[in-house]
Length: 524
Image (cartoon, rainbow, N blue to C red; front, side, top):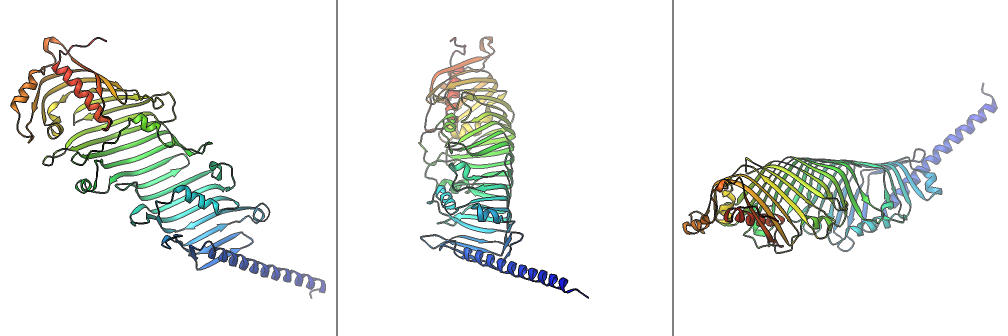
């Protein structure tokens, strides 16, 4: 038989358990009610609904089941965010920090199966979004882990409803995240230890004309991989020409893989964005660039690449860029009734050293090896200093055996010139600045002939062709010389045309000097 003393003990324990359970139930109910009230009062433009809220005061676990979030524009009342989720789960809330340290700490925040449609208003600046987000946070928030699982994100234009960004399969995880709205500098307001992002079937409208696509993306703190990366103009070539008000390239670029190694990015102590990488690899890029010259000219000033890099609005530093097994085709349409002229570079391998605006007086150097027009080896060495405001550069090229007739597909429609003969070897060096340059060239060739075509591009203009060939030395080995030399001291750049137009102007001047001049090497 149970003694009276033991009975009292059991009763006391039972009462404590009942009270504890009751208080826990009341506390959990209070927390669930409080969370529900807070969700209902986020803002006048935000409506949040859910099927249930489950809280456990002892484990610090909170779960919101099947929440939906609708956010309306503050002036138009048009829905700008429509989000549905399977659940939002918070684990191990730090009550001590919440009560005594004015800090929210959690072990993890897990967002499951988010389906979000957001309408972006381009009138609102990105800085305003960030400011609005941080303004709503009054306490320091620290999370050991935040995870977004199986998300489907769609961002469209607020006015046109066209797609800006689509990621139908997104997974994201960030570790040791801290948000401190009272931090003294922007780079300390949001900090983290590591993150990982995986996405499939990305589509991003970079501008009104072009899309970026990727089959798979994997990004971490210090490494990024893009599989089946593409840059595509949205329109066909004919549609594109109809909507353009001035000429612009039509892009069709496919890259098997992009690998960014030893990556570092963020805001520096001056609150400027920076991006650094030890190495960037592009595997098997295939590019076709088309330009319709029948569209009105773009007469804006075209800076050299040194200027473009120097004037970036962020700090860029990529030690090495390697391109392997690439190809590039450039097409240019000049006449309505003619096919576009085409230049092809295959078996393209290249190395870029010190690409960016953070390398001081070190040279940016570019080395390219490729096959030009199917079977002619071409090597290029190009260097300049980004920090040099005079934009001096040196461009060297070595072209092996080349059948000039292969250029007909480009020179006939574009220049009304038919070339015949063989270039055995051609070397040239261009040194210059944004205004003018000098070129030195030497070449071997056999049976070279230039035919000037009539305006229809089909018949030979016998008079002009004969006149031109009077001044062209048919062979480079006349008078037992191995090479003929050409040069031009002052080639003026057309500053409203591309860098490659500048290269062509130099080559044209040097070829004329070599073939129509005396062919001797000039002494400095």
